[in-house]
Image (cartoon, rainbow, N blue to C red):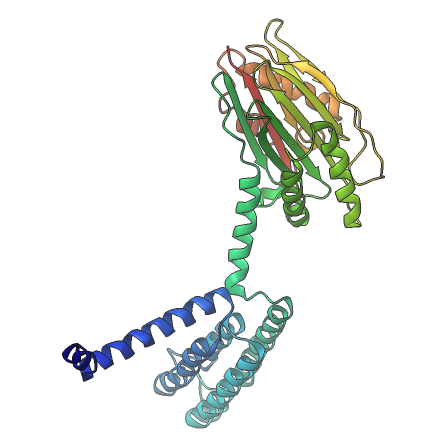
Length: 382
């Protein structure tokens, strides 16, 4: 025991333990810095070292390394540092400019000198960098976490819209296309299998606004609606969603929604609608499309709203399509014409099946529409 303790106290062992502590500390500092929780001293130290390095190269060869190169650490500092640290970096850059001006001589005596224009460019970059740092400080989200948060937001919306696996004999798919090619949409889907897996409940919602403007509200509502779905009887879902929306007191707080309750054993279903475009059903026996329109007002307009369902049955070969108004309604085309066009395009898939059809239908019907578009297909296979 004494020999083991003596071996552990040797100089190499102590140095190894100390090196391990340093590595752990640096790793923790790096992780905290990336998350926005740690100090910015590492970035500040690195940028402070680049300032004299740039100044030295400029004094040696001002043609290849202009005095204006000092904007590089200033721009990086505006993205990486907090306002207080940024002022220290600016002081170092100003000192470097003075040293370069003295070392290179008056700007009137030759090219590649520190001119008033160089000072103005460096000062302007510093000013805008400080504005950016102040904005990040006020928001409380460093730039290095901002992109991660937006990615996480997008992924959460995508996961909420993932449809559950259906039993054999059923096919489902969803296609969402945000306005302007953005990553965030005011249209979202929440779905769950309830009643021991025998019932599929799907809610397709269109939040007022579009794209990035509606993205944050879409995330909030998708989380709330996902919690309500399956926790309440089907007839109570839309009234509860309406009450939740009213409690938000948003200036632009309305939404449309359609709620499908499908018995996967019998194919019987109910549709509850809140100001949403009707669903359309393909009857395989006749090859004709039928609109399924239920009654119900917009969500978030007034309290005590009633939502009466419409019923139907999906038989083998039948298809049910749910969609948002961006897919069928434009400024120069009303909703009935849009539905006719959508069903006309969908007829092309009757013979070969609707697998992969949702994306192609949006592409064919509303490719360049400046609105969020969503299409949900539920098929009972033969």
